[in-house]
Length: 445
Ligand SMILES: OC[C@H]1NNC[C@@H](O)[C@@H]1O
Image 1: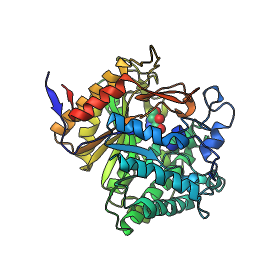
Image 2: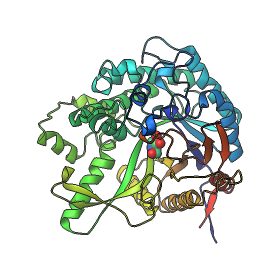
Image 3: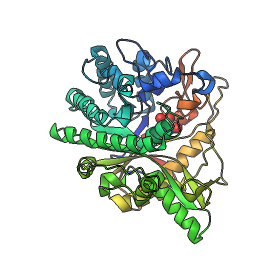
């Protein structure tokens, strides 16, 4: 069995997000976020669960960093809770919130684990939502002020910065479909929110450049590789539309200074004739150092005149994870090749992983299905590098089981098991598998 060895500097990490693990939702001066408000609204979350306590990472971060070191992580991607820093979103600072992240970052650096910070992973300060949230263009400015403060505080010790996590998801699930905070069902709003998020991204990148910081800044985009069900002209067209809508919507404005054609067509068809000032695209397209992609599964589509965009999803034939997502490792290879071909930008896989219904037997979690998932996707990452993609690193989602948004705690993505009754952590077999990958900087072919 050949060993597929990665480039020497390849960055092996794991990822989490503030609302999903921290808890301490109203402790030490933290302001309310839209996810606190949404999850406290009955009927929004599985069994009305919420992130009030989550994995209690706010109090257990030292133990958690020790576990990261035991696994041998080279980097740790986590997000900042904006309302923990600025309880009202701007203005009054919360020193205890800043201090939490200062201690976390110091502990990471002490363990030689590179911090990779996501500035926005969906937990907008509720006080800003009360002023329109992402429907209010000023929120972009407030985001850049918050980002600027974080750069000022940690810009010299944090080498990797991600402005936004998955703007498509927060714009669409939050504003069009209502499945995520702030729970709005307003398709037009999703386009406005998405645009203001991109503006926020661009303003933060400009602030980072103005500060002269030496690290790298980018954005994280969720992608699902698209395949036509058949090679018919109609299905090929449907696949092209879905790729533009689902994958390129938030990428093209950054690299091509314009939305994909399909987006404009939707706006026109609905008479949502927004006038986005051309100068916005000058800001949005401020050059970035890398693109982060979150890959979980693919989309097979076919033409269907009765569906949204004339595109219907077709279920894949392979094994599915606990999320109902088809396991399709080749999709990771294909999307890496496609994105690097089209944008020629260094890439990090900022999330890849699988939810399975793990059980503890004799104190062990034998998550062989997750091991197989990770192994097959890591192999595709290797083949993408072999075939010319400038892939810089891989962050498994997730370091630990956590609050999976509307699914609450019912979906376990972690390589570390969390017993929510006791907050006990147990390294799953996949954590030991990943430890070996990192030690050998490679995977069996
Ligand atoms: O659904 C799994 C993950 N997907 N990307 C964003 C994360 O917050 C999710 O937990």
